[in-house]
Image 1 (cartoon, rainbow, N blue to C red):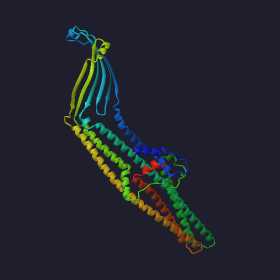
Image 2 (tube, rainbow, N blue to C red; image 1 turned 90 degrees about the vertical axis):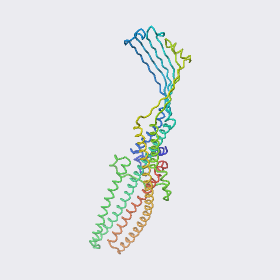
Image 3 (cartoon, one colour; image 1 turned 135 degrees about the vertical axis):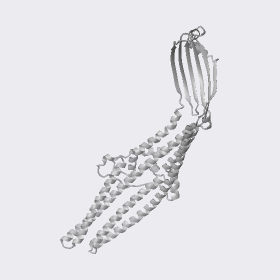
Length: 483
């Protein structure tokens, strides 16, 4: 149940509402998990699977039964003198019956039968027969050789673990989607800031050339180049604004807040992560193979298929059952005397026997066994597929993480160099030692470097999340530590 407990922790700690500002990454993830229909359905499926074993155990609850029947028979008789001209019969039964996990059917019954049939040859008329009987029907072969009750309970437990792991996978998917939407939105905001800063610089440069042009200190080509640079920056601002709006709508969608699609900008904070990540590939592989919920689900489904095949085999075996009963009887002309006679405990009624059932052709049994074997083989192949995919995913994410760290380091150095280069060129421009072409080009170089650096930082954050998911740590991190 560890997956369900961790999933419940996510829902219990969803304490922040949409209206609070700024929205943190942890808040957005909790919001998404709490309101996700996929997670809700997966949790419901897990709870439904957990009910199967209690349902099986509930079949052992005792049942009370009762019967009352009255019959009057005036049909013609072949020998009325012996058989009587008519008969009247009243019967009522009370008792308790119970099933056990070993297949035993135990029945304690109190039966009463009153017959009125006047004839010359009946010494007791009316006559009341009262009996108290304990009977047992016990299957022998299946339940003592194979214990299908244990197989079924093990099947239900494995199915429950598989459903819980599926719920954990659903939560991981929502956490990943929410984190990606949040990071994309945050860096779309940062990218818009870069575009706005570049536009401001281009606007200042264009204004400078406008002033110089009035005094004849600037060529038309310099002014045109500055204005063209400003137009390019305007287009970049338009594109960045559109990307930001699309990112905002994606964030609202993953948080199931589409009703707020017309609202203004969503205030978010700088995304921070506190994930424990493996540092080497062997550690990542070992951790992932032991912790990934999709692998846990595949293993549980394989175990369930093994027990399902066991159940199918036991259910198709020939059956031999023991039948036995022991009781006391009483007989008299009325109910009270008959019950008194019964209470003397000196009129025992004992029976014992065997019953067997053997399939004649066995076609149904063969098909059921074949179906169970195919289900088991399918589960084995699915586990192999999931394991291979997990290994590939873990190695891919380790390489992506390594590359992302290097990209961030390189891109930050490039931004620093481009900024230093632009500042030097601006100093030259103020001293009249620079051309418009160089200044505009250096501004664009810095803008491109900042944009690419932002993308690298966003990718680096997402590789943390992806690697944590690939090694099975994402669900534990968001389900248990972010509380």
